[in-house]
Image (cartoon, rainbow, N blue to C red; front, side, top):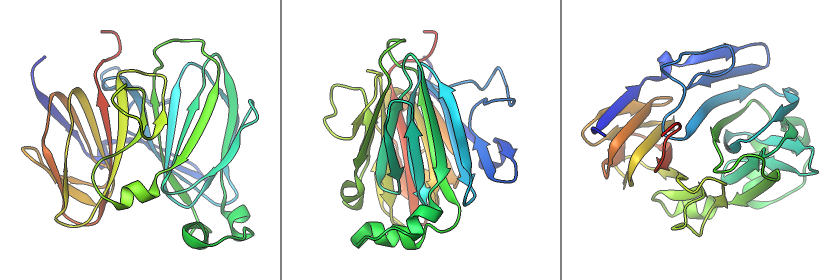
Length: 259
């Protein structure tokens, strides 16, 4: 493979906008189909969603997909047909394995949050979660189809506060942190950066860098603003430096679909 960096700007993303949902798609999704933009590595979906209070995705099916959800603002209620339920908020990683088939719903938790009693970090989240919820949902293929459906969530806020790239979800043997996905060639990292601070990207055949918040500069590539992505092929090791407070989501992938 030849080294390549493909920068996709936020404004170029397809968008689904209805009364309760504003969803921006980094890849082909739903009725937005471009045969030249279906995946990078094993990542098929990178949706940046905003859901209004009292609304959300009603119960719907998925099959043979590893789905990772990362909340940026507010909180999201998850319920599925295997009996799992949970409230996802910033700093909490969540993975759902659709396997041979699962039904689930995802809704803005603002009403429930207002009535929740709590303290510490979650109380702070609750106070700011009475409006829209914003989250990034990412899909990768599992190594094996037809597995048992599953669910996992894990609080990693403390690790994020220490800086650096923090493993969020991984199927790779080198990671013993974060939540597990059923793809042995892929790992997702998150980083929260203050202005001037930086992280170094891993070395991998395929990298996907998404600026979830703020603005950064990628060594050898240039500036990326909120919503921008950089798809790197046969490269890695570049330093990413924050130009303002920023949050990054980085996929490291050692395989691609169809190869």
